Length: 351
Image (tube, rainbow, N blue to C red; front, side, top):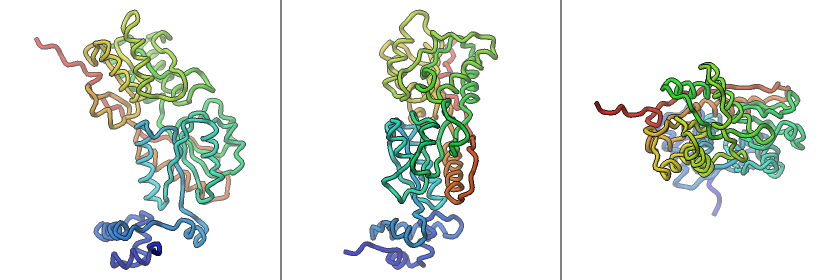
């Protein structure tokens, strides 16, 4: 049976081919919501799938970009992917998603996409790929990176953009919130050793924590900031680190985790030790994943503006894709907010 075409969708929905094209490209303001719904229903009913190869032959463009992330099992990257899909659709692009495992070879492969000529540009969140490796790509594809620039980046000759929140400022705000509760012994989970074994994001979050302490005249205590092996944050890593911190010597008054998944793991370790936040210690995370609204207690966190992040990343990438003129590397900032929930708000004792 022949593959359904745009003509078939248009006939089924009772609209023009141009209207179908506008709906598929996500062009806003040109199609009513009722008409768009009718087109989407027709697409589902006849099981239409765009022919990307034919599109490229017809226009010289595939309108396909890729998102490469380390781990889709991490809710943070799932939230990033959801936002990117929406931003790409609004810009008229199809987004393909690739999981790299955070391995340098896989990340370099994603940055080149030699085996997939349809892909015109890449947005990626690297864990192990530095500027020197990027500069040696054999296919100079437009690329935008999520997160702070790596501390070992080789500089301006790598024509890529970075889209990130101001991690140091956000970390400073979160640490300041804990200090405002009268807390002084704040342990951190998520510190990583210096480059090349640390992500720039981890280094910036540690910097913000240290700056907040210094602003209050408090010294940084390395005993309260043990390094987490590797570059992957996980619930297991959070549980292991929290189990060690909470059961040795003088217990800290708060745990500040550099990712919500670490904080969720810490909650489990605390429960196993007979401890509970916020009664026995305050707990805060980072990333604002949806799971934090449903933990017990609900989790105080920094939530990036995922929609802003995605819009800026897609816009920067499409700008690079649309010109052959050199564009200098750019550091683009997206919004964030401190979300205060139960895990740092002790219930007052009854009189």
